[in-house]
Length: 214
Image 1 (cartoon, rainbow, N blue to C red):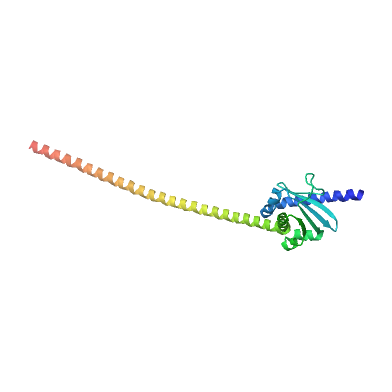
Image 2 (image 1 turned 90 degrees about the vertical axis):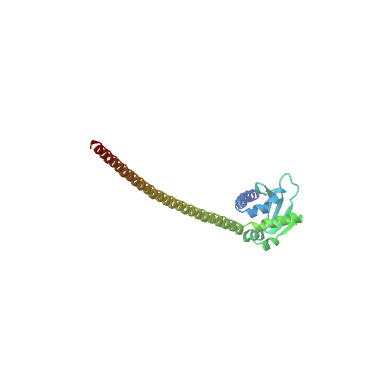
């Protein structure tokens, strides 16, 4: 009895770890989420009957993830799909990310649900996780490169605008100085003309007085 209790407790711990790993995979891998969605939509229950060691586990697909338990859910009388396989066969199918290894697993149930389960298992594993991480890394790397290129382009545009504005300021300054010079020249000419007119007027008045006196 103690051995049975110990093995059940150990199995529960292992299932918690596997369930957490599946939750992480589902968050990271969009393709895996797509494969799990139709199974979760139907609330599919899969029974895993493994040999060496002999273990029976029930996997329930839901929108929260894949829930693992040693017992069939209370609301279900039987699972939708039953998988009979040696533990090493299932581990190989999960770890290698190989559809050929998945096809070797013996499954019973509705053909549509069996195919969905095969598709899900084929996308689970380290291969899927590595591919997902690589996609995310490449995506973030390309975004960083794109962001850097955009910043450089903006900086170059700002520099061009500043250079254009500086050129316009220099041009306006030169024109302003030219206008100031022109105004000064006009003022100088006006003063000269005014002085000449005054002198001419004085001379004319003096000449007129001289004529009158004589």
